[in-house]
Image: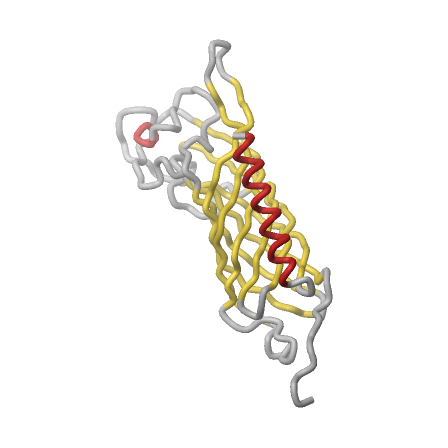
Length: 244
């Protein structure tokens, strides 16, 4: 796992340097603040249920008015419980009277491609190109402490997994050097133990134990949404327009 983590980090850094070599004059850096939540066996579909803080940093390397590469490093917290107090569960045998809850902090590093719907920050039409919606997608690497049973009863060890990030958002440029925006981004993982903190009355690895079978089984998700602020780290080098 450590080798995989170093390989991904090397790929992430090399990608940023490669893109930077093409766009030295259009690099932004900034902060993200928002809320994160979990979807899985304990919360199959409700967005922002038991939302927790999310904070991070980002670097955006702009290729042109429609495309940009973005690197992020985010710390998120997720939380869940069963039963959910405001849901009426069907009467059935099993663990209907039992309670299970978890809270977990994770670190997330990603590299994504952003695609703007409209031209954004076009050097010769800055007033008309201050706003755009956008889509993003790429690869992410998530670090968390995974529970593992052993002869001593169990322990938590660092673990790293790949996830698929994708999101939607809007951004606006209120000043020549400042960008602000809103983004809602999702992480699809390929594990089913983000909600597992050890054995108890309920087994979170078995969705039927929660009386809530769903298509989310074996595919825990986490998501976060919030506001970001970035500033231009390198000034745009705009060539003279031909004919002027």
